[in-house]
Image (cartoon, rainbow, N blue to C red; front, side, top):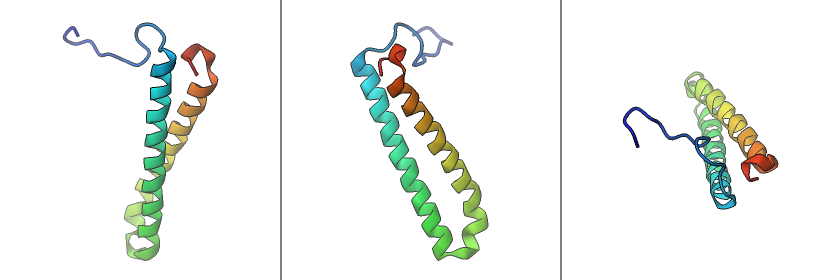
Amino acid sequence: MAKGKERRFCDGPPPTGAQQSRFIATQCIALNEARESRFWLRVIAATHPSTAPQVAPHYEEVSELIAMLTASIKTAKSNPHRGG
């Protein structure tokens, strides 16, 4: 790859079915990990109330990531132009 050029998912030809399936599977793994992280943040805040102020921003951040990953997966599955 040429120096200074980044390879992006949307560069080049449209993804094949296998590539799209792999993309969706990877996004689903990330979504599950984010959900688990949010669960443990909730457990930490509940069992150690003094940490709640430190946990809150991370909980909000992971909730935003969950929303983004969910939207990404739904789009990838429903958009025929992307191989879903």
